[in-house]
Amino acid sequence: MTIAPIAMPPQAMAELEARYATPPRAYHNFGHVQEVLRHYADVAQGPGWTRPSEPYLAVLYHDAIYEAARSDNESRSAQLAIEAIAQWLPDAGVDGARVAQLIDYTARHGKLGAADVDRDAALFLDCDMAILGAQPAAFDAYDRGIAAEYRHVPGWLFKLNRRRFLKALLARERIFLSDFFHDRYDAQARINLRRAINEKR
Image (cartoon, rainbow, N blue to C red; front, side, top):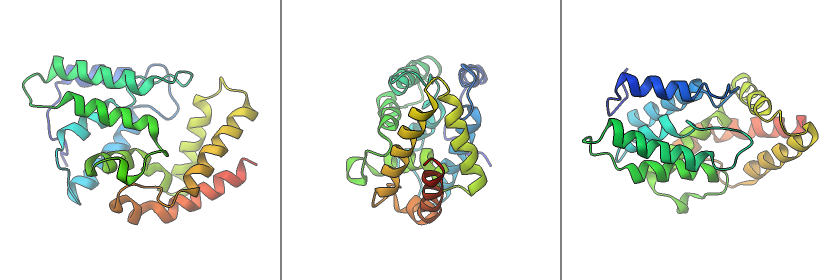
């Protein structure tokens, strides 16, 4: 099934995939993008997107620049998306600022509430966080991948901060911002989070 609401030139996609391979990543690679695109397609077939092109491009570019030791990955990825839109899709009617806004939101996962964002932004952010509600084997692979990407952090400190992050997610009244993802994944996400928290004691 073709879900792309806008056609990306092959060279643009090749460059994008190369970025997701640099530096080598255990989780935030192009496989992650493809998984988020699967959830994007679920939304397209379900509640639908108000403006589909912007969240689609945000999915493609949201982790294009990713170095675990840096705190500005989202803003750099957002800027890259704006430049790529100007280069490859100048006449496509894409709102580059909106794409950048969506990407910037991903820096605040677990801190934003449904009232803080609009409908499409909530769905986009939930697409990125849907891994929390995946089946146990997929969730565990994600958890291991994040740990591998943070090898530069002392093990005890990573475990402490990771457990703190997961506990904060679990304590939220709503893990997912949209009803669509809440109904689908909240129960499994809470099972996964509780188990992961207990394992990190």
